[in-house]
Image (cartoon, rainbow over all chains, first blue to last red; front, side, top):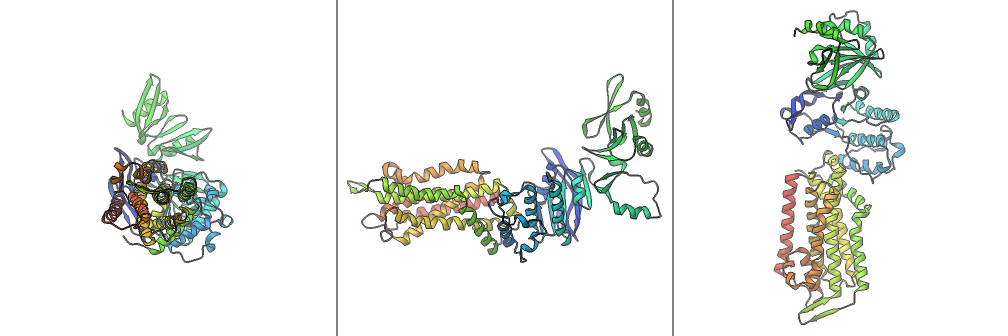
Length: 329
Length: 248
């Protein structure tokens, strides 16, 4: 069952495009993570809450039971956790005793404590509990793991389990893909040029199943990066460039980098047919992403990537001729 | 827009709790009682009614206490918490928790009104006036309507301002003007007739009337002024609410 649909949303603010080709369907029980900057995330939430209207496209809400937890949402600090949740219990008309759920949200030890005295991690779980009382179909949470300790993250994930058990769809936005990997099953990355794209993910257990499969597709290559307990697969066309630092190759996508086990030579061998070019002994660049070649002096060349003026990749003097032949300029 | 009694009841309960534990809000009623006690002990008892000069210490203290409580406490009790909720983003949470603007407004209007009314009544004996001297029915109607007007003015300010600092900035001149009415009416005869058109002016007329020989008589001007202030503040409030919503 579909709960919320973004149909080719585009939003411009002051002649600047903030969201483009934003297309997503959120279904029941989905666990989705969206990599967005703070500004993009705030705009997405404003659009859902109809505080802003899209420049083009539309948002279809198939349910009214959508709850949003913004990072700067406030709580009544002078109230106790119990008092605060009892208040929202009355608002929500939630009939079950709150004590039944307090352990699930790891709030038993602070039940009578004033919210003012809670840590940020505890406050986030109080907010999660508050939304739970409304029996939502979909909750959208902004940057829930920012500044959280390992223990805080663990307790938050446990609290989120209650949502999974009730088959409540959860959409999380964050600027860090590592956070999204912990919180979601499906991850989408927003790219200002390509729009919203799904990132291929595989759990370790999934890999085992896949490796046992007998049939192997041909002519498919994805670069993998292991982060936490998950392996992320990147299509060659997603990658801006690959950089070798201390013999470790890092895949660079926008402002993010992901380590990979393959050496730069191995990557060059596999990616050359996808339009990658070894512009320097430490760099392998996706030629489709190159927008400018600048010559600062007779022997010094620099490549500039599309939409990333600040990224300047060195082009070796000896490689300039090869590149000229490749892209015929 | 549909109203939910369950939500209004929940908000009313929560607001009672937060207002009673908020020192800066409770300071208004406490100060109005304190000022009345202080003035009662410091001012000489005078009751003059000769050669066109009418002055009664009891009437002055009673009107000062009432105006202080109704104007200062009333306006700050509605504007302050609304601004605080906007500033701390707690109002946004409520609004996204299936609470409507009207649920919120009604729920938050009841607690300050029910705090202002007993303080207004308490000011009667504290100011040295006996309940039998005050026409209690008229007193209750007049002070309750005036309190409601103050709360609505506070909401209008709260809707248009963004934070507590801005709210204080807008509240201060309004409350200063309204609370200066009893004193100005007493000492500036030229301005007195214009001040009769303010709702605190009507309150001052009422207290003066109570201590006159014939007692206070409801008249067309006072009733119209009070009704007009209530109607205008209600209309302005509805306009502000429709235009900006409760959370701006």
